[in-house]
Image (tube, rainbow, N blue to C red):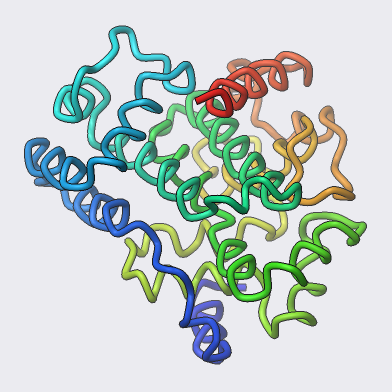
Length: 288
């Protein structure tokens, strides 16, 4: 499916879709600002600092083992200066999604979604490094890839939690079950959110195609961010962070074999090594 076709589908979503809880506006403003090349670090810090609660949580996560800064930042401007605007964008989105989920994170189904998104982002970060791509962009894309699930969790929280708890199949196969329940799947819902929230169009392919067929190419140059997120999503399922309880996953060696030799040389060949790294980082956030 092409991006244009995905966009066309989102125009038919039910009106209930538009009555969602508001996503943290600070994060949306930051994402739009960072998409511009001439963004000012001072202006970015000013926007984030305008919400003391958001400011505080962002600084806490920025200084956590999740991002492992060499020196802790004492304020947002210092964090932006040290980590860079792209990194701050990813941290903002992390804080925003966790805030959006709020008390629902106590529900097992929602906790799985949160951990899957975070694991996908962290795996994407490592894959990007192996492909010599921007790791901060990869992290942000990983957090964004399942953003449509937030809409579903808001529209029919009980029904969606029941679906996530009872469905058995792959992460791609659940799309049909979502369509039966809602009239659209979480990829289409994510596209609608990008349009509603006026987010950068760079995320469209990531959100629409992360369950598309895998790219098999021996040339690292053929791999785009979409391809990396697709693989990162599958790897997150495989190493113990599925988006739903009975998710059927692909064995690690099969996923690892998809990597071009050049990238494979810079990515963990053993599942346990990757799983331990990602698990430790996720636990560091849970303890905050």
